[in-house]
Image (cartoon, rainbow, N blue to C red):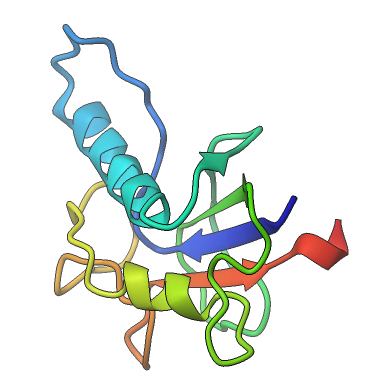
Length: 134
């Protein structure tokens, strides 16, 4: 089963609030997670074992800088579902770019405009195919 990792500066904490929840922070965090999940779900069903994890400090990989960031791994049911031009995450990068989010939650950087930016110098979300590194 293909596996992917997302790193983002956007607060995607999965709070799983109850219907009667009144804490606006929990509701907004869940809304960001839902937006991410729905964008991914445009092409495939999504499964995961662990909810997003927030870390403080240096960003992973070669992203550079320090900030609160969230990391989340998920599986999809089909191979090559996000494949575009020999990039195994090309379609997902396109799908995520510009998806609206709620900014200024527990993130440590300003998110402006309030959306996932998956391309260019202002990127706030990165996607990696980790299928073969499991």
